Every structure is written in C-alpha cells, then in structure tokens.
Image (cartoon, rainbow, N blue to C red; front, side, top):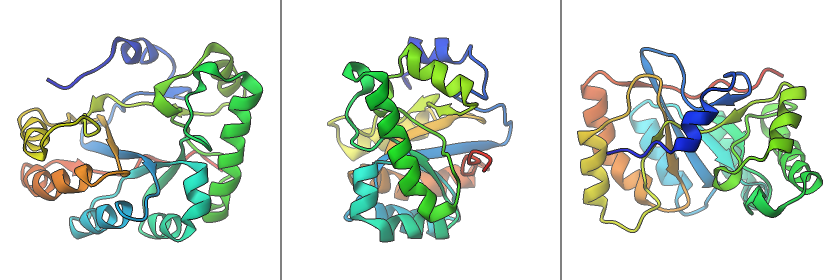
Length: 212
C-alpha cells in the first residue's frame, strides 16, 4: 500500500495556491524527483523520460545546481519543470526563519539563471515546514509542493519489490509522485513500469511553474 502520511492529509486542507499535495486533474499524473541534479543518475533518468515522451518536475538542491549547471540546462531544455529544494538540503526543523529563507532565496537565484523565473515552487527538504515559513509563503503568494503518492524509492529494497508495488498500486489521476534522482532506483523502476503505465492509458506532465 502506498503511504500517505497524516501530515499530508492536514496540509491538503490548506489552499492549493499555498500548499499543493495533489491536483484536481482527472487525466494526468505528475512525476517529481528530489535531491538532484546528480551527474551519475540524472542523465540516465532524463534519457528514460525522453524515450517515453514524459515530462516531469525536478526539485533541485542549490549546492548541486552550482556543481552541475549543465544538467540543469538539459532539464529545462527538455521541457521539465525545475523547483526549489533548498540550498543545502539540511532539514529546516532546527533552522531559524532567517536561515530558512536564505536557503530558499539563494536557490531561487540560482534557478533563475536557467528559466528566468523570479521564484520557484518549493519542496522543503525532508518535507518539514514550520508555521513561520508557511506564513511567509502565504504573504508572498508563493507555493509549496508536497506529494500524494510516495514511491518509497529511497528505501533499501530490491528493485523488483519497487516495480511490483508501482504496478499493483499505480498513481491515480491528479497524484504527485515522489521519487528521487540521487540514485539509480527511479530510472531502473521507470524503465519497466513507464511502458506498462502508458499502455494502460496513463498520462504524465510536469507541474506548472510559478507565474513569473
């Protein structure tokens, strides 16, 4: 069974313009990948998505953007959305709001070089968001993005188990799927499941970016 944390059920009660956990779309699913760009794992993942004509969303870490700008250029050039996953990927839980906002806006500035957007959809590292950051995003009319379908691709388990779960309980229309591109698990699984999902008539898209 796919895990949907209680916290996400509570966040889903907030306006979609502030916190998006899933969409109301009745036709599309949304693959999203955290923790990149990674020089070993992101390019093969992009190859897989391109081979199947699937667009996705990448929530990128600032330090890795600085180290691998050419991968970010490719992500954007191939029509995927780039989002903000903080600068350092340290949990916001023990940071004060000044430090949190520095992580957010420092990464926004890096991403702006690639897509000219002043702000980007934000997924907090480890999924943690406190009241002060939430209030800041509300007053600035910015968007936090979570997920409604956790692939669990970060767990220590055989790829076969991951594939079986994804095929037996696939994402529903409107689901935002959490995956990661700092290992090869997502690519290995999607190489198998994407053709079958597409054959079932499932369609995928990138999340729309924040309006510039």
